[in-house]
Image 1 (spheres, rainbow, N blue to C red):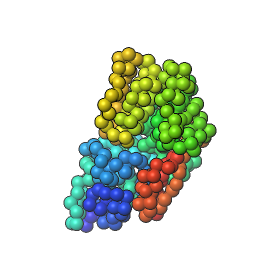
Image 2 (cartoon, rainbow, N blue to C red):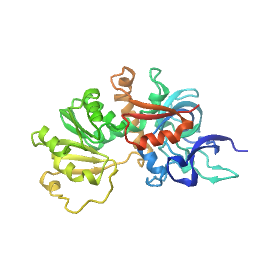
Image 3 (cartoon, one colour):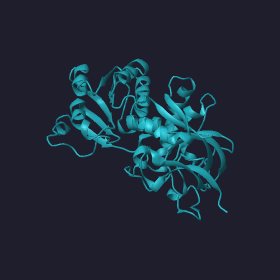
Image 4 (tube, helix red, strand yellow):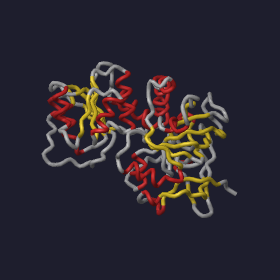
Length: 359
């Protein structure tokens, strides 16, 4: 008889936050290949979870049906070809995707399911995941802090360095400045000697947080200020070298206006939509030699994600330990309150991570 576990499921496969529930009859995965079976202690929420829950997120083929992409926990077992350096009982944190065929397909009498090339997401008691996506958890970090690191800090690292080509002395604008990815990115930019760091946010409390807590040069309230004009004013008309955007069409023209000559706009999302309004002027692409590049971490292959993990371990992990980099956790819920956790994220009022702890 197949082993079972508890995992967060969605009634009718998609719906509002109230459609979430804990399914105690979920098949428990078994690792194979480079996979490890991790007993999850805590998992982090991300905005992609809300979109995937509603059936609006383009999930790549290797992604799991179960929500959740970041977690912390302990290793219980391995597949046949695990990465060296890990053993049963190790405390780890990591990403819930990366690589294919990491667990055996699972079949249930009530439900026939091949789980995303064999593995579940992080909203579960157990996950089978590539060891290339795991990081040893320092004893100085709590389970909740560790669960809030992988997706946000690796996404920020990818956007800023690999795509945005950041170097010390460059200036950068982070939209959604109080979001978890931008909180990470602002800290990275400050530590790596950015010439100036700007941010946008939707409340004065959030803009103040970006400046006074995170160390941004300036931050602008997009609801009460013309952020593009403010950025140009702050830079004496030069603009910024790198723009990191999650908003999409509503900020497209503004981003073209504020990016500097030979600058790069990195697009990580389209929260305002994907279709541009009539009248958008794309002349700046040629006039300023702008590069616009979209990127997604979730659809990358295992080798790429592994390199990003190694970059995080080398450059950021020691700073988590000595607290040079701060992991901002807004609220921790028991996972039985997953509905309330999603509803809080939907309000867009938080500064930092929302974490669920598994009992």
